[in-house]
Image (cartoon, rainbow, N blue to C red):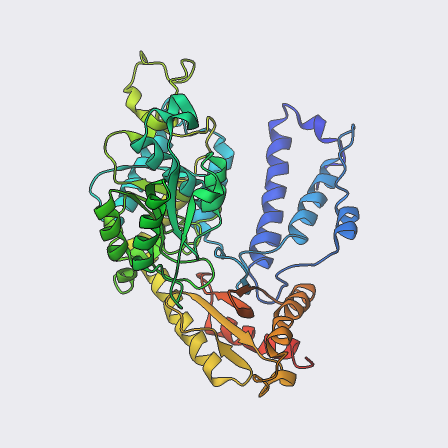
Length: 493
């Protein structure tokens, strides 16, 4: 039975602390795992912000609360949170709950160490290098470097900083005054972290030259050539091209070999943002989508997305073998990275990164890989493609559903055309009215709690849904539910 004493009474009481944690884990298993992954439960329990503030009693007080109150707070936090492990959570590029990855996350949090020196994280320093080596091998490199980053956006920013440093190493000490005007190149479909990174690194968003993409969202290499020539003519120095393997909305894969040819001709660093699509490298059937990735200088890859390793698990992989990461970012802090330690100080990897404290992000992927094996993870990727094809064929059969395009990946983009708009595509206000459908249906599904699916406009296209087929527990029944639920929610529109 939960104690009604204030939690301060637990200090030093090992039995009481263990009892509390067992009670908390029981709530987690019941609310977040059992209910949170059950199709008989809601994906979310929507409340307006002011009501939610009151329900959670968020304000912090001077006096502690009882264990009973704390356990109720744990239950409430889970209850009112979105269940991203739910089979009908289709909203983001991550979803699902892998039990082995979760076990790794629990162990990581329990040990509470920082991944900067071998002396305080011996297991994880060795483990991280093994995992990174495996990821690099899948890219096609038998040597190189890498690091786990706090998200794919940061991985992209690292690549930009490394490319700049490699060309102008004086910038580490002298800053922007050591640099000419620089230009980097990214597709119009690139992730917004490219422009954010340019701003953050002092390059300025004007340094990002936008390369045209074709109708399927793939970078056009000929326009890349044109943009490079234009930048040079304007007095800028090109230094990096950021290609994409798996764009955020359409799921497009850039033609990496052709882009690599351009980079080779101009001596440019090629970065591949494969945060979303990198896991396709595990599939012998589909890895051709990333042909040419081995020619990149750097790759961003987020196993927390398609592999469901859990947030966050974002790797930056480098082909470089010259210790570029450490040369670019190292500052030799003497209180951490003493050179006269009793072990090989090359194992102290913390000076490679811009962070000091760095959480352990390798264990969840390592443990999941140990449990599933490479073949199990390959099957997970292949099954996502199979279910994607099932969804596409079902969309084609049903009245009121229209594909934006045939998908190349597991992003399925489509419109739901409600009864009042069917057969009226030629009407002058058709696009405007169609754009209003997805926001209305999104509000209805969220408030009902039945599912979550993202929508967006794209270029001249009206708002459409982007279904992400990523959850490893997803079934044909969940796909059928998605389509039927949209029909139900939109039948009066």
